[in-house]
Length: 95
Length: 394
Picture 1 (cartoon, chains in turn blue, red):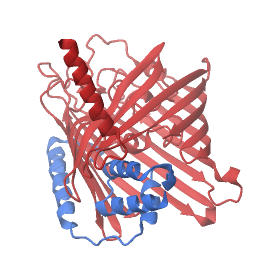
Picture 2: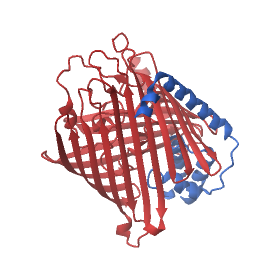
Picture 3: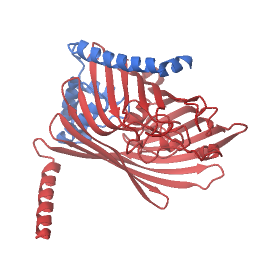
């Protein structure tokens, strides 16, 4: 609880906010050239979608609908571009 | 002439809409999703109640980088149908690592509200204490109105996700005439069975010293700043930290300088275990809220609140019996601690257990039992409830 009170101190509050932004940009810039995942779309579909809810079978939507649904989940679940691309390709191939 | 113009405008809008909604359109694509649910709540010493909710989600993609998303909420309430704009925002994918959003959006700091609150995803009929206006006092916003930047970055086998936002933020509830205390009001909201609305209309209990998360129009010129960073060391595990700092006092009042600071820690772990013949799903969230103590008026106490929950679910996917495969067992403990010096000083803890049966991947029947203990200044009481819910995502 004392740690939490310290965090609420104005100075710490501002320092934390600035640190958060610095860390955020460091991550974005620092890992921009990180290794590309070699996981197949089916595995990424299970890992990412199944983290929050039961996975929907590929046959439940059309190709165009999957485009929209995966774009929605890319923004909601913070999928990377590569993850979203592989997942939507897998879903379209299976419907 | 005016009627002619009106007809012309309507015809144009209709034609444009048809083009927009067309599934075969080369760039514009539309998807209608959402969820619905029906509850039957049998609370101790109260009449059994049915509840119904319907939350359609509208998704338009203009191209591969621009998405508009909106969710509405319809619920039967007080003899009528209540409606609410759950969220509505335009998302623009600027590049591989940055997505920009503007509008009303689910609070990325409150991971339960952002990802787990829909009735067909939430594994129990009720929501954890402190995370929604449906559960009485709310310690963290369900939605924000403002701008956000977010994304995910792979780092070898691990992954980071982030979100940063600027928003109207919450406002401070002050009732100078309140000298009687609202503790009993809080205690009357034990059973928590609604799903859906996460911000605007259900702002919890408006006792002095609490925060109102439906802060429209903004009560001051300052904007709240918040964010969350999550780390996935392995695909099955995500741990996150979120915060929000905001001035919550209303301009030109004696409380105008009062600020709040929120810390949120969350964890989720989902993994299939062949040795257990099924899937283990663990979720938890700890929320800590401090509002400044200006030492004046009705705010003259250390205003610190906290809430947390931990939930374990198990579904025996790998058993041979199809009936047993579709069963899911869930247990959750949650707790809400409010400031001792506050007029609204009711601490709560609750144990809930349930059995779900999945009819298909997004349709579930839930049976749950929950026992809630409310601790007032000089007494405590325990109430129990059985809750049945049928929920479907589409």
